[in-house]
Length: 286
Image 1 (cartoon, rainbow, N blue to C red):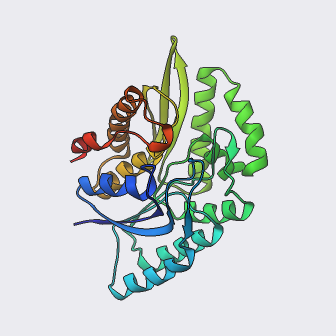
Image 2: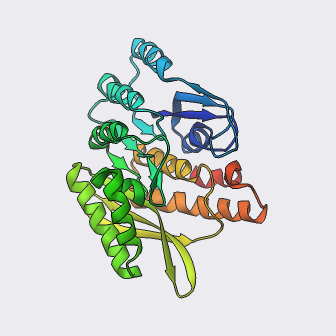
């Protein structure tokens, strides 16, 4: 059975990070091997939370895995709390990767034109090094701009792009994707969560670049932003690519699952911090 090392935090409540990634990767017939970066009572969107930073324990786990000659088929990294964790993941790639290891990096640093509180210039520079080693990345537009321009210039670029008319805005995002591909010598990327309006309806778009080919995947937008949707998306993509599926097919599968899971969450009036109702749709991924 193929294996993916999933390097993220473990949150008891909120259906995100490891608690979202493990069931998705597992149902796709791939073993999820978690390497926790932190242990939380619940994800940080709630009003309060307990946080146990696991940075100092990551090397201990890596040491034990090295004894067992562990070589994952894939590595998936999501939210990272500090620059030292990025250094550890870079070290992880040196210790455990082969030429065939697929590395998916979700460069979690911001959203909607703002950097997260955990962002720092040092974290960004380290993230760029990790991105350059990746097989595929899944930034949202904010993160794509941060990678290219840094936090301050990102804000100006965000305003410029979001102020464009629809066709011009999508074309600008495609140009950003090409610039990312060239700058970081990437083979594949997906710029996720692009808001699109057409004929009075709202859609979510994902811009896909796969070995030089470009495409878009759109779905109707319903509800707001829910915890863990990006983690579910990236998990489907990573497990699918490890099994040899094309990027676009993985994206279509992820979007199909998330569209119905979000619909159910809206119908049930689920709090956005609690995540989406994805469990009953996992069978589609088998």
